Each structure stands twice: as C-alpha cells, then as structure tokens.
Picture 1 (tube, helix red, strand yellow):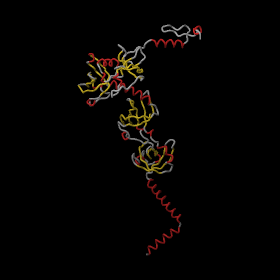
Picture 2 (cartoon, rainbow, N blue to C red; picture 1 turned 120 degrees about the vertical axis):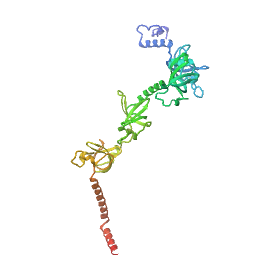
Picture 3 (tube, one colour; picture 1 turned 180 degrees about the vertical axis):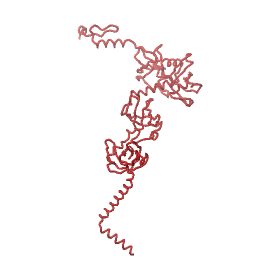
Picture 4 (cartoon, rainbow, N blue to C red; picture 1 turned 180 degrees about the horizontal axis):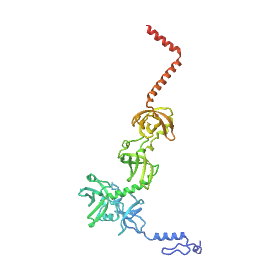
Length: 414
C-alpha cells in the first residue's frame, strides 16, 4: 500500500487533539482510550487496589497497580507464619493504599511485627485493620499491644456481644481498627467490634443471596419460644421455624424437638423482604407419612389411636405420627346435653376407632370413636375367631369329630 493510499484511511487523533469532524464513534472511543492510557492514574489513601507482583526488592515487593510507577508493599506482610514468602512474581495481590507521599505504599493489614508508629498512623488514616495482642484487663477496658506500641480498647468495643468475663480475652491476638490517633501515636484507641460488625454485614449479604424459597441450609438454633424456634443462618440472618413445621405429627412443646445451640438443616419456605421475615421448615426434609397411607388405611378398618385435641366440631385422633383423623361430633352418641359428647374423650387417651371415610388426596380420614361399642367390637372379634375355628372343623370332616366324642365317652366310663 502506498503512502498516498494510506493517507486516505482515517487516522486516530493524538492525545489532546479533538477527533476530526465527522469521525466515527469507534474513532472517538479509540482516542479516549489512548488519552487515558497516557495520563497516569491517581490514587488516594484508603483505596483498595489490585495488581500483579512484578519484582522483589530487599525489604519490599513491587506491585503494578496501573499507575505511573509500581507500588510497594512490605515483605513482612507477604510471609506465612513460618516466615516464608508465600507469593511470587506474577501473583495478583489485593491491598489498601496507606500512603501516597514519596511513592505509593500498600498494605494487606498491619501485622504485629510491622506496627511502627508511622505505619499505625497510615492505618488510622486509611482505616486499615491492625493486629494486636490483648495484654490485660484494665479499668474500663483492655490494654492492647502492637509490637512496642500501647493502645486502649474500651470493654464495649472488644466484641459485638456483652462480655461477662473480660479475662477470657487476655492473651488473645485480634484484629483491630484504630478509631483515635492522638499525640503522635502515644494515645491510641482501638475497636475490634467495628471490624466484627463489618464482617457480619458482609456475611449477612452473602447469606441473603442464598436464602431463597426451596433452598436447604444449615443453621444454629438461636432461641426457642412457645410458637417455634429462631434459627441463625449466618451473619445474624435469622428465620422462624414454626412449631407446625417441625414435624408431621402435632408438637405441643418445641423444646422437645430442638434446643438453643443445636445445629440443624432446614428448608426455606418463604421470604418476605418487606417485613424482613424468613419462614423455615424441618418436616419438609422428612418422609411424608401420607405417602404410604393409601396402602395402609381402608373404610371399615378398626384401629387404635390417641386423642390429640378437642374442637367444637369433634375430636382429632392420631393414628400414627403425622396421620390425624377426625371423629365428628355427629358420630358420638347423643346425651341430651350440649357438648356432652366431650365427656367421653379427653386429650391423651387411647381409643378404638372405625374408619368411616378416607380421602388420601385431601389427607382426610373420618372415624367414629367406639365407646360403648368397644366391648361389642371385642365380642364380634371373638365371634369371628370362633367361626373360623368351626369352619376349620367342618373342613376336617364329621368323622374326626365323632371319633373325638367317642374317645371322650370311653374315658368317662373307665
């Protein structure tokens, strides 16, 4: 291609020059990207940056964060507990800008061995976490040590819950945020609670993304009430496990199923973002007893069950865990007194019932409690048993029966 031919092609605008009139959108985008690539990026303290390690110095590693030059991060922050460097050239690191004067300095977090006064000031200005050791309990809080630096943590800031025994924190190494930096670093006030609350909020956001109807999650029982239990799903996000969703059978006391501190697996039944409510279920992860009811029950069958509760329209009888039948008030003998039928049954008693109706699709069973008919039912059972025996005798033949009678008469004469 000749130079004259080449001159006919659209040429990109140089940095600082406006694109020619009539230039296309692609040409304008190219000009903008070219200008942005030439202009060095600026940073501010506290900003989170990311980039690859490009080289190692004697005491620092150099990171390419897209600026005019490389940023540096102390090697002390890149070693594992055994003192070995755990990164290499090309690895991507994420850090916080702690200083922009005299070059860009970064930090993951200030470790105890790196807590010089200058670095503590950098951490205060950028909000960077700092590792410190709880030395001892003092009036109103705790004495914290960052290498050779002393700091004060109020007792209300050591945890995100009330501390009944402050001494349990002594000797522990925690991560703190510096909330006051006075007298050139001689007077430091720190908070662990601030970081814990931030972590909890981040965790809560992660948990909320997983809490959707149908999800199966693990959680810890936070508290148990008469109507159910509150389950902590993580990050302070709690859902209600209602007593009616704890099992297929009727549960009178939720404490009989779960206790505070229990680790359980639940299913999310519903989420109401407006009211901030999460409904959970436990029985949905168990086998539904009605699934086998079709092969178990039939009309006319006589069974035993336990009376669970009394209503105005009848009595509920549990035939097996999760299967309740209704003995309607119309099936009870008339006593002439209103609600007189209730005297014949009471919750917790075992009764014999006869199945009158059965609808497995609607999960309904109608029964009649056999009160004064229970003895009659036993008599009927005896009659049926006797009839079976007689039928067996007939099948064996009259000859064997006559022989039996003759033997009996002979024995009497002897």
